[in-house]
Picture 1 (tube, one colour):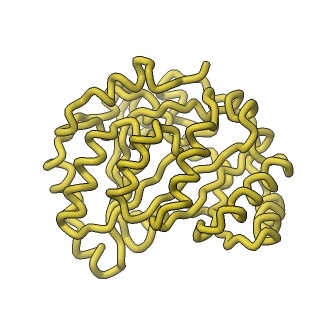
Picture 2 (cartoon, rainbow, N blue to C red; picture 1 turned 60 degrees about the vertical axis):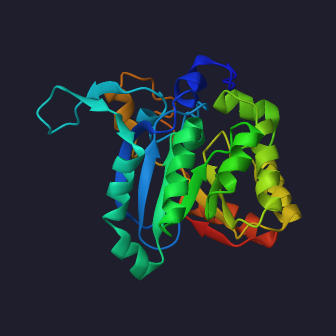
Length: 278
């Protein structure tokens, strides 16, 4: 089913006043979510239904319970907590010394952070006031006016580009890629530096036709710093069981090193700078 921005999923998050939001994880000392040492803030809720998602606890925009991880004594744990802008800023500011030394900052991820746009914009404004570098890690699936408003407040973007064919995109993610591609055009025309992130998922995104279509599109815009290949992995597999959710990737083997190299070579043939793993 196509999840659009008029459904209850988005209304839950978008109608908040921006003074608070729901966070499901704060990752300290992150080194793969933008330049330098970073604090990554994971905002809850996502309008897409990608089966390969390794943060399934970030899909639901509300707090929820999940079985505790093995070794934690059983029982359940709460996923997601309401945090004010000032509370999140206090966590971010604890690591300013690491940002200053490494050229790092804070990255807003998810879920899909644009789903909580008022909260996200308030956080970005406060970071800018404090001269803290910001990165938006996004699927790009949001109304164009919201994306444009957030883009004016962020210093750098990591933009997922999964599937170019609209029908296949809808089949695998539950939504059209129309908004994604329109927002990517806006990003490519802006002065905000960005990298493309391509999830390499066997049987879903790995067709040569899809890879060459992405490579051609990115090259035609000529503004991306490069493309990060994100090979599928099984790190988040146990979370599905703990959430009583079906893991649609169960039994799917991650791509081999040779397959990842072959995809990277296609991108390089199009003149793109390539990294593996972000």
